[in-house]
Length: 361
Ligand code: BGC
Figure (spheres, rainbow, N blue to C red):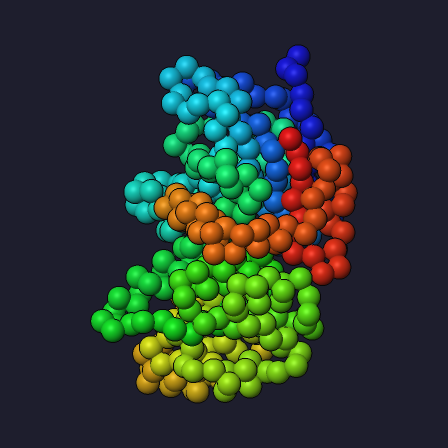
C-alpha cells in the first residue's frame, strides 16, 4: 500500500463539492525533484471551480485536487535532477499541448486550447503536501522572498499583460506610457498596480469598496490613487485624468470591461484579464466604440496565464517591490489558514480581505 498524504479536492460536475481527500505520496523519479509544499494561494478561479463554473478532473479520476498557486522547497532530487534540496520554488500552472506555440515554450498561447493546468484542467493541483516535478518546470525563488514568493503566479499574469502591452505598443515609435488605470483591487488588480507604479506610471485603481480599506491603503502606500466606483463613474474618473495610456481590466465584470473601452486614451491599450464565468448580455454603444477605436488607433487585447519568462520577471519584480516598498507586498496576504485541515474555511469570505493562503508546510 502506498503511503497517503492529505489533499483538498472538488468533484467537477458537482457544485460546492469541496472535500478533504488523499493522494499517494510521490517519490522523485529520474530527472525529477520532490517538492514539499509550504503554502498554496487561493484565488477567484478556485472559487469558480468550487461553484462548478469550470474545472476538469485528471483522466480517470472523479476528483480534482485544487490549488494552482504554490510555493515550496525542494526536499530531494531523483537521479540526474539538477536542483539542490533546500531550493525554494514555484511552478507554472499550465502544461502545454502540442500546437506550435506550445511546442515553442508559449503554452500560454495554446492555439487549440488543448493544454492542461494544475488544479484547473486535467491535472491535480497543489493543495497537498508534496509533488514531483522536473526542474525545467520549476522557478527558483530567492530565500529573501520567502514571505511573498507565493504571489509569483498571480504576479506573472500581470507581467504577461504588461509585456503584451509593451510589445503591441512598439507600433508607436514615441510611446511613453504615463497614465494607467487598473480596474479591480483584488490580488491581480493590486499586483498590476504595484507593477505599473514600479515602472513609474501614475496609476489610478478603481474598485467597488468604499475607501479606506485594505487595498486602498496598499495602493496609496505605493503612490497610487484609489477611487471607489460607487462614488464616481468610470467616465467621471477619466475626466480628471490625462489621456489613459494603459488599462488593466481585472474586475471580473464584463460590463465594466466594455465600459473601459470608452475611457481609453488615443493610441492606448486595454488589456482584458478577467475570466467571466457567466453569460450576461447587455446593450453597448457599438458605433461609438467602433468609431473611437478606429479614429484613436486603440487596442483591446485579452491575456491569460503566463509562461516561464513572466514567472522569472515576477520573481525579479517581487524583489524590486521589496526595495521600493519594504513589507508592502506581503500585506496582500490578509489570511493565512493553518494547514490543509482548515480546508472548509477557504470559501468563507473575509471582511476587507485580499488574498488567502494555506500554510501547508
Ligand atoms: C490562472 C491562470 C489560468 C486561468 C484559467 C487563472 O486563475 O492564474 O494561470 O490560466 O486561471 O484557467
